[in-house]
Each structure stands twice: as C-alpha cells, then as structure tokens.
Amino acid sequence: MGKILNIKKKIKPFNKSIFVEGDKSLSIRWVLISSLSKKKSTAYNLLKSEDVMSSINCIKTLGSKVKFDQNKCEIIGNGFYIKKKRQIFLNAGNSGTLGRIILGLLINSRNKIKLIGDKSLSKRDFSRVIKPLKKFGAKFNAKKSLPLIMKGLENPKPIKYFETRGSAQCKTSIMFAALKAKGTTEIKAKKSRNHTELLFKYLKIPIEIKKRKNFDVIKLKGVKKINCLNYKVPGDISSCAFFLVLTILSDNSQLLIRNVNINPSRTGVIKILRKMGANISFKNQKIYKGEKIADIFVKSSKKLKSIDCPIKWNSSAIDEFLIIFLVAAKAKGISYFKNLDELNQKESPRLIWASKILNFMDVKNIMTSNSLKIFGNPHSILEKKIVIRNFLKDHRVFMMSAIAALTFGGNWKINDADSIKTSFPKFLKILRELNR
Image (cartoon, rainbow, N blue to C red; front, side, top):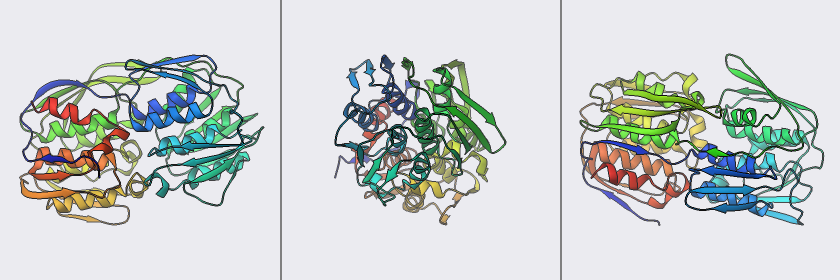
C-alpha cells in the first residue's frame, strides 16, 4: 500500500496565488498528435504525471523520439506509419484517455497491437471505441476490456458514426482513425470536450463542425501528414477544481489560480459552483491556439445553496463531481445529481465512492445506480476518525478525501497518497504551501 496521508486539523485561512500543472487531456493529446508529425514539436508545462509518461512510453515504442527535461518536452514523430514489428506491446497504465485514444491512432497498423493497463484500467469498458474502430476495418479479440489485441489495416475506410455517450475519448479515437482514412468521416457526437477539434483546426487539418442543440456534427477528411505542434500547456481545470472548493469551504480565504484552461466544454464545475453561491470570477481572459485561458479568482463562501443540477452540465463537469459533492454537503437544503452512471466507468466506481465518503462523514445521502441526493448541513463539523482505503488508487477519490479533511475537520487517514502521480503530482506540495 502506498504512502499514507494523515490530516488532523482544518486548513488555516489563506490569501495566495498558485499555478496548477498542465492540463492532462491536452498533454496526452499533444503527445499523440506530435507522434504523427515527422517535424520536431515542443511543449512547455507538459504535465509530468504517470498518465502522460505512459503516453510518451507508448509513442516511443511506436518509433517516436522524445526528449523530456524539467522545462520542456520535444518529440520527433515517425509520421503516419507504424513502426514494423511482429507484435507491439503497449501499456496505458491507469489512463483511460490514452488507452482509448491510441487505438484510433493505430488503425493502420498491419501488425498486431497488444494493449494492456493496470488493475483499474483493466476493469473499464473499451467497447465504446472497439465498435466504431471495427467499422473502419480494425479487428479485435473478443474481449471488451484490457488486455486487448487489435489489428488494423493499411487503408482504413471512412465511416459515419453516432456517438451517444458524450465521450470525448471515443470521439477523439474516431478522429485519429479518420486522419488515416481516405475520404471523409462523419461523426454525430453528443456534446463533450472539444480539445481535439480545436487542435486539429489550429493545425489546419480539414475539419468541419456544425453545432446543434445536443449534438455536434463533425466531418473530417483523411490526410497524409500533419505539421508539428508547438504548445504551452495551460493549467488543468480539473486539478484547479479541488483548490476552488478548498477555498470556498475554508474560513476567510481567497485564491488566484493563474493561467487555467477555461474551455467551455470543461467549465461545468464553474457553472455548478456559481449556481450554489460560490464567488468565482475570471481575470485576464485570452484565446491561446483555440483554447480559452484565464486566471481564476475565488473567495470563501458562507451561504451555499443546494442545487438540482441540470443534466446538460454533466459532461462538462464529469471529472469534478466528487469535489462538487462536498460543496453540496455544506449547502443549505437538498441537492440532486442525476444521470451520472458515467462516474462508475472511471478509475474507480466514483459515484459509489462518493456516497461511501459522505457516509463516513455522517452526511445523509441517497444513491441509486446513476444518481445521488445529498442532504446538506452548513454547520457540519467532524470530530471523528475516518480511514479511506481500497479505492483502486483513484487519484480523484484521494484528493476529494484530502479536501474534505481540511475543510470539515476530523482525524483522517487516507491511504495510497501515491495515486496522485497519475494526474497531479504536485497536489500535496501546493496544499502544504497554502497551509503555511
């Protein structure tokens, strides 16, 4: 079992400014896109997490050259063709983003690809990408989870596909495959993160997007090569969210988080927290290579309101619900969160874990297979011992627990502190700086 974090006191009031690490979704996408260009791509503030390192190790196995130091990462890819081997073994580690997206990138591999992952990733469903990639012509072993064996084809055919889950991973996997197909692939996709579309537009890849009320229609023509991508990765709003809630639930505190990606497909957490009474504002907004960037300012909130959370915000806050639930636990009234079955498809069954942790904290809640009702108590104070363990080393469960301990009180023992290395290695360092 990894390191243990013990927290026995609530955090002291603070007034500080911080940076969070590079956006994980953008970091992984940059690595995979750069592997397709034969020219040198350079990134600054690339997230130095286990998920990103797994991405780098995969593209190195496929033939890319990588130089990664403290300040920057340089990649010279091997173009659109896969390095020839009898069989290629790739390890996605804990990363569902990497595991699902890279299968699309491998659509034209004529050799067998074996994809494996850790215990948590091996329990997750890959059928959402297997189904469309089969339409391109790829062949898979019968399984729907890792380990998977895939064989592509030299000339994948373009497809039409209706993506109904709101899965950016599925959509992006199809888009990577479409790059290598001769002709135009059309995707009708339920709204989700659009980082890949913005990066493809910036790279002048022939992509057309028509926005509808609930879906986007994406048409993407296959290409033979792409340009290099030089990039300064903005801060990750999912990582930022933990410090937003820490500040909101702390006494007499305020925080400025600099240079954060506020892409509208990712800011559901801001909309939800504001609706609950949080004092959050954007400063110094700008557009950087298609992405919206800003400094985020947040202050303590004494009067938090319950929420009947609109389902339309789910996809843009899917990675932040665990921390949002803590705000609901301190809000006045009953909060309702619905259609969240996707939470149980993450690194751990997160909806189940959220309910467990709230129960440990004596916060009344009612959970179904896809919903959570939370009975908030603005005066809730913990004075009990709580132990968190056996959560499949899910980084967000760990971070939720740490924020709960620092804002609700109690004597907490949280196992597997090393889990944060998958997405946010500097999480505890920043917490210590805020609590000085």
